[in-house]
Amino acid sequence: MKREKTEKSWMLYDWANSAYSVVITTAIFPIYYKSVATAQGVNTVNSTAYLAYTVSIATLILAILGPLLGAVANYEGMKKKLFFTFFAIGSVATFSLAFVPSDNWLLLLILYVFTAVGFHGANIFYDSFLVDVTTYERMDYISAKGFGLGYIGSTIPFLASIVIIISAQMEWISLAVSTASKLAFIITAVWWITFTIPMLRHVTQQSGLPKPPKVIQASLHTTWHTLKQIPQYRHVFIFLIAYFFYIDGVGTIIAMSTAYGTDLNISATTLLIVLFVTQLVAAPFSILYGRLAKKYGPKRMLYVGISVYIIVCIYAFFLKTAIDFWILAMLVATSQGGIQSLSRSYFAQIIPKEKASEFFGFYNIFGKFASIMGPLLVATTAQLTGSTAYGVFSLIILFIIGGVLLKFVPNVSNA
Image (cartoon, rainbow, N blue to C red; front, side):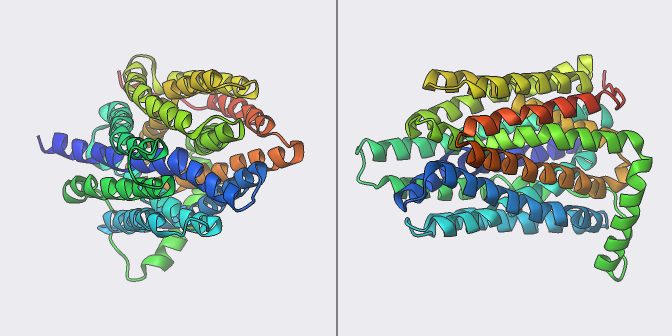
């Protein structure tokens, strides 16, 4: 019973923080930012590029800090402290977005960096807690179920935000659309904070190294030592390189989807509705990936996800109408949760359990450096060609490279 309660508390954090993923990363914030930037005379291509550069800056910060933070978290009692610190930074910064003046697009981007650093920083430790809350045999299922709950949970504050924004647009309520968007940021922060409480109360670090007198100095030494050792864990090293490429494409598509839709003159209302339905569709597919991984193995299901994303990149190049955007979004919905959850659980199964936080720090750095390359690729290609479509299409190479490298990692099975 205690393990079941711990598993549920851990999974509930996906329910809590996924509202940030959809409202801030994917949907309402990018649309709101684009409207503010456009009103201030920034053209559509440049505003999309500036957002991509901002995403790159935020992920660079985490990429640099990730391994060191992971090493610190390996010491007894440190993992939850670091988790709470970054969770607090992210949730408070998200709340603060509501108080940025409606004509200051630059300050929005600066504050966005803090929200992203807090969100992704907390996820380093949240992911590494997977080895503390469940057994090896249940990792794929628990990880995938967490993503599934996240998609379901995110729809509630997202729906509330959509209702408020559309009501403001239709003048059903006496509220400016910009104010309605700011209320969405507050709702997201409150939701995130409220449903993180079970995680803080019931999830604890089960294994850790004795805490040395000089934690930072010892952590730097440990990080350097592990960095040199990673190539010796051949399967871990190859998987991280493969992950670097394919998760780059996944993260970039998620982060840039609404900006891309806006550039194609798809209305904000349509974008919000599409993204809401995407969350609903993604929930059962995420859980399905976990169940199929038990039968066919996580590696094979990762190939399925990569194949779907290759199709997404090709289709996105020819995207012209709102119907095309609907089709594209549903394709993404079938695999975005599955490919992320199985990457997390597969990695947890092939690393030394006693070094989980440190290895997840490197897992994070590979993911974050990838997230720098993807948006930069989209941004520079869009500015060089004058078309965002070419930037999205160029992401296909990342999935192909990731898929080829994945061939060289071992199969693991929880069947």
